[in-house]
Image (cartoon, rainbow, N blue to C red; front, side):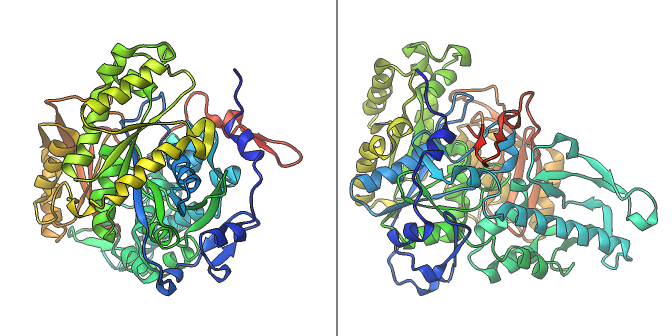
Length: 559
């Protein structure tokens, strides 16, 4: 059977003018700045002037990702549409797609099937220019840093201890490690340098965690760019860069308003990696969403051990947010991969492999219920190749353990396919169990204790092995006064462990900490494990090869 592509479905949609979408969620026209007919920025002043009570917050996360796909964003969108189908005032708060993955391995990231946000092409490409502004602010700081050294270096910055990297929103392995400043004194001081992808920039995390322009400026000024010859940290504030950087971000800090295929308001803003950063949309977007709906559905990146852990331990801690319910997305296909089935054989029924893969789902569920003490439901995101027997197996096994699992068909049926999930989510929200919420660790623990808490409680490992170099860095951060910051552990998204080959629910493993650094502007400690890539490369056959546009401006190939 031939299915319409995501972009074909999106292009057939009758999109409402964005001012109409704003009215459906109670946003007065004075608070929106239109970017064409179907996109708008929301003025954050609405948070000060609104007297509306915050609605319920629903977090969507997923099992450990596989090449088979989980459909977390698709489920998030379909659930919001499903809530509206059952008569609830709902919206959705999502992350923005990054150009690098869009042209690299993904081809698009605005949901899928009949659960998408539109205009899909705009959202996947330049959208409202947020990521370009973030890249400009990042690279302005890099330029001012190198210029300071060139102009006499009054701060005594050691070029060999510079930690700030340039960025570009494209997968380009060629730029991971470079030497710049060549060609004589007039062209700067030669040094080793490199680029990260824009979504891995600390500026992205800063933007997503900022609650106002003044907070943004304060966070930007705290960013550490390197160290002096006497090993003292140097900040963006000392380079007098924060004001200009904030000016570049004056529009980017405003949340973006678009809509789903079914007209549900969608606030799409920010998009940091769920390993090098905290993997969620902006605090400001979430707050605006909560003020303008009775139910807000949001997502966190990768599996629950990364995205949800960081959403709960970092974003919720800093912003004072607590989800009323959590949805954990799984697919039969992905569970079979965790059970040892190759991608090429996933279309064949295999309940034995499915049961072998189920412990991965159950550990994620246990984390949400027993570590964070939040109510949760499993969403079984149906693929066309799934058999009734396989779906029954997942739902039955969950039921045996007291876990409600609901079939979701939002990819094929839109909001109607998310109505059953929506009813269960409303039931969980009505139970009002958020008061039981706990973090996986408290800030007053040592850095080492926080890392070990996540490894043991969330990953299911034995302990963290901190290499000597990393221990020196931890000791240094403690001396600099960063000991009470939360930890943002960067590890592979493909396993609970730091080894991407260990699928399912591995046990008795250690996580090796290789590097520890401070993201002072964001306010967390980045803990690097394994081989974490902050600048992805293009695959052998990148999605860019299939993307095109005709004389009428119609884009093809974005899924």
